[in-house]
Length: 358
Ligand code: HEC
Figure 1: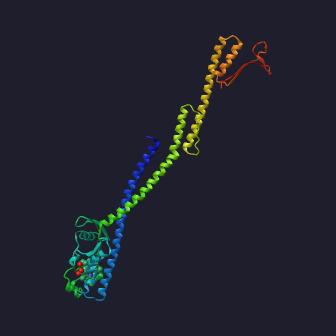
Figure 2 (figure 1 turned 60 degrees about the vertical axis):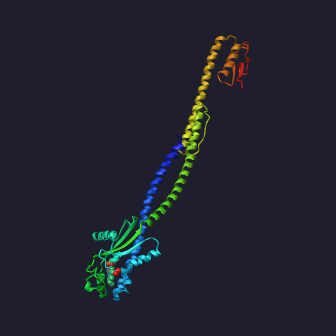
Figure 3 (figure 1 turned 90 degrees about the vertical axis):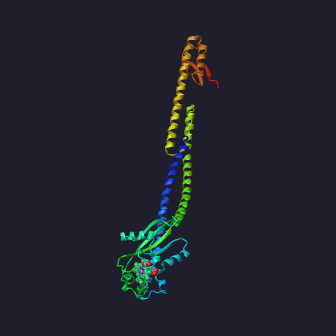
């Protein structure tokens, strides 16, 4: 496998692993963010409902408004379930709410199973302010239940304390939900959120994240592979070619790689090495040729006795075996009779000259 393929494959695997981890963590984060958003949404609705309840209850008490057929509809405890039905017409989230109790005055406000669990939770943990838990709806569909405890405050006792102290209209109309004491748990504000809102938001956000992250990852991968090619693979390829040429005996190979990185340093060292090997190789070749010429010359001296022939042959050997381009035979013996020497101006005698064939 080529280096480039190896590096890119490893990078791709690392990227993929990273991508899956990032997406998984992102998905979990988006999920908790969406749940947190929904919780805040529920908190706002709860705040709105609780303020409505308090304002209208106080209004009833301050103005001594009797509870009868006409006024009952204005009592939030009574109308809150109807407001919830109305709310569904305005907000298409499937969210419902009600104030419910384990001892309801109005049977419509009786806590169901999940609401009873919540009531028991706040009875056991009175310091807690709210609770949000997932649960399955009647057909198994996912829901979230958000609830807040409704504690008895002093002004509640007017209508939920001793029956004989309650306003006559309450006393006469209701038989239940009396004898509460300050700090008792009267019920819970119950808000039910369909899980599909959360699922839809999480899916949409996760899809968006995956698309944008994929584009980012692909771009980074492409840039990285391009950089890898430009800065490493191509240059290593050049070094490889130079090494192959060197192996074939081309010592003149030199491919300068500008820069101050490791590959440039390797290339510079490689060039230096090639140059030195080339020099050594040339020296060796010259030496070998010289030895060959010398040995041939020795043999010739033994075989030939005519100086003319000898000088001629030795001169040829020097250019043909010795690797010299040009050779000549000189003698210091100042004997003009020694044919075939010719006199030279500096007192030397020149015999044969020979040149290497072009
Ligand atoms: C003016 C009288 C009045 C006051 C004050 C009042 N309530 Fe009620 N409350 C009622 C009546 C009446 C109902 C039943 C309404 C219906 O018929 O739906 C009721 C119902 C409720 C319910 C719904 C469960 C059920 O029993 O049907 C809760 C919870 C509740 N009240 C809590 C409180 C709390 C807590 C306070 C004080 C912060 C309070 N109420 C103050 C008259 C009052």
